[in-house]
Length: 290
Ligand SMILES: [Zn+2]
Image (cartoon, rainbow, N blue to C red):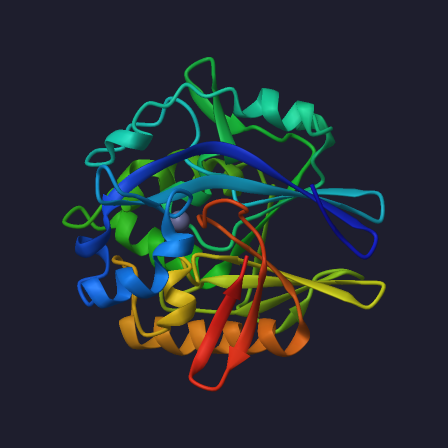
């Protein structure tokens, strides 16, 4: 558990596995990079046996001011994920882990998705009587409007749809239909006393990040602005699957600058153990202090 001012923040794990070959994901990675970074890469961020980067899929449970907030909603159970064997038809006790962290589904006041890719919306819904219904019945769900518009358009196009392996229909549309969604622009936009929403488009067109401030301390929930700490050192290295590769790089530097200049504790969506940390500006770029 992490503390930021009066907030407590707990990681709710879904999976934490070696996922993709490092040199496929980051083609510019050389033996010299390995020599420079090997001290911290293995075993938490890189699996030497398989040559794969380790990625976590998790949510962040934020409690502050009497509110219980779930940030990003992983892949979810019973979801068909063609081409994603690690996350296909999961059967994970995610809700048990959430309960152990002090939150039953009824307790969640807000679900906030940094973007609407399939691995950030899964637990928005669960199956009941053959239908996908909101998992968190009392929650308002905060979605980025540009992402809703973008994926709705793809989903409606028979040549491109269904969007996000079908998860847009399963995990986003039911929330809209139940009237539980609050659609927000990319910001900057103040959500409540503690949280501000700001734009970080590029990985998805409506990708946002959430700034938290409490008692003079700051945090940032950055979703997929970077997937791996190597991207802190090499901000131009994109992870695959972006709506706009150049915009993703601009957003990464924007968020790195904000986090470094504010001393914010950074909570990414997929970075390995210890899962959260700080970034610092250095003469030649940035350093990760995780
Ligand atoms: Zn992701």
